Image 1 (cartoon, rainbow, N blue to C red):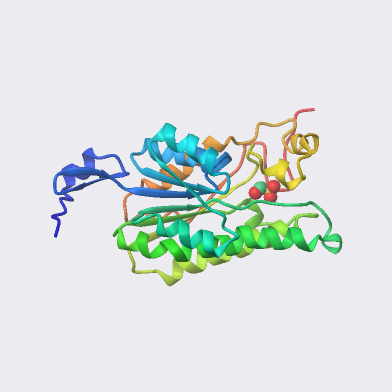
Image 2 (cartoon, rainbow, N blue to C red; image 1 turned 135 degrees about the horizontal axis):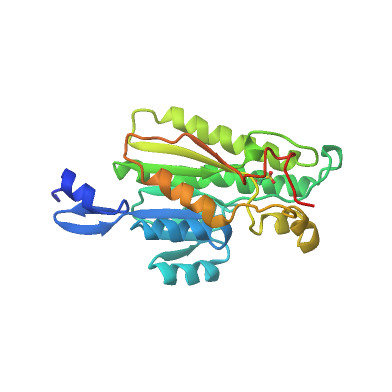
Length: 268
Ligand code: 8X3
């Protein structure tokens, strides 16, 4: 039986990711999916800077390992499309206080009547079922920590729809519905649910959506300054490091020049 010394003084002095147990400072664990690049990689760095031991999961585990080496974290292979991979990933994490559901993405940009079912299947698997699987596997550990935080990175596509985007917007709406439902289902338990909904962020997102067409991907960000992954990561780190009674339910973050998914100001 360990004595837990949560004195006000030790809390004031310890970074958010550090807990003091029996006088020893230990790093709490934060898990980030889709940790090999973009928002996931930046979030891993931001949470490590807050004192967390970060576990980065992604298919590209070698890239996760490079980041993990840099921040004193751990890389574990994770394919959220594969229930077996999610089970093995969760089994490798004995305890966790924070989970950032960041894995996901978009494929394709066609009118609904021309939808490619394989792309839809991938988007629903990666964004919706992937979030469900990882959450189901790790939520008990967040709750057991006594002060868990679950962050789901959705999108402004979870709040609006736009032409040619129905596969992605429907998946993001469903992912957000899952996340918001979890919030209600765990009222009274020591876990917070934070949804972060970014607009335009300069990551591999558009390159993947447009099947590797760099020119088309670049056009998305032409004439304005999009968010950087670091901008979103700082918001996530802020939300995670609020006091336990503060739940930032939904944070929408967009570039100044973006009004909505379909309306932006662009310099000629
Ligand atoms: C990305 C934002 O506007 O391309 O999640 O759907 S948008």
